[in-house]
Picture 1 (tube, one colour):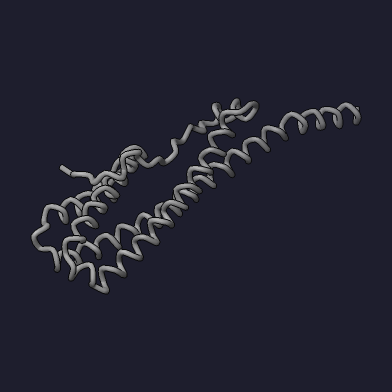
Picture 2 (picture 1 turned 60 degrees about the vertical axis):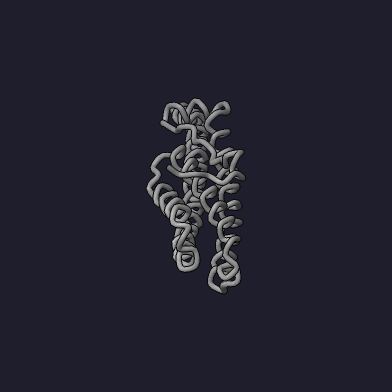
Length: 183
């Protein structure tokens, strides 16, 4: 009888342990993607703060460029309010285009280009853009690991049953080099 019970326990452990390991792996990978997104958002928030300061600095020098400043401000507001991943991607691409237009306009104002505040903000924003690119790459890398994990056998069986869903990566638009108009 003892052998029978011991054999039954071994069979249960052998059958249950892989399920537990698969589930824990899925949860760890999902948590890693959530952490990567949080780190990405920290950099985006820093970007939004710097953009506000940059717009105020430019406003003092380029009062005639009201439309450009409004476009950057509107794009920033849209980006901070975006809810879905698709909305966020579009808003970030729009904001990047508006910033490029702002930088192009700044070229027409020698006093602005010589401003210590403007140059410092531009440098900080450039550094932040680099951090955003790194954070986006890290996020996308973790998404690939997560999506692979929920799609490969045998973890895909458990992932589907436990509600693990595909997460899209955060891609930058191909035409981001073109200045954007915001309506």
